[in-house]
Image (cartoon, rainbow, N blue to C red; front, side):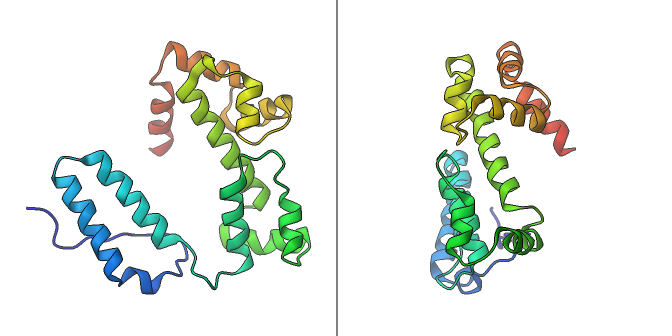
Length: 184
């Protein structure tokens, strides 16, 4: 018969208190429920993801730390994105801002940027396999140096990009199995 109540647990600081009680939020949750029980599970997942993004999105009075995090999310695929320049625009030194950012998110802004770029590169390899070159994947994911990209990729995932593509080509479920093992 469906759910009477829907609980969305967000394990981060959320400034959207007014949004959670709004009519828009209720309509989106009801739309998600209707899509899910109407058999349109994939569409329901997309709407649920949008609901989460809206619940987490900062309001107009956001602070500088959240603005930089959002800027990273919007610009991580741009190789010319200069994180230090973004921090300087806010009037902070890089060291001071790094301390504030780590206190809020548990990692440095550089790690956030690198993780976003590497995760995107991994998705590119998952989607395109060996149809995309290492240099092209590096550039599309925000790295302007393919050698540096390969080193960072190997550090993050334990195999170089070429090996990752090769493993996924012979066993397409390898990345899904790896995710399952990491979640256990």
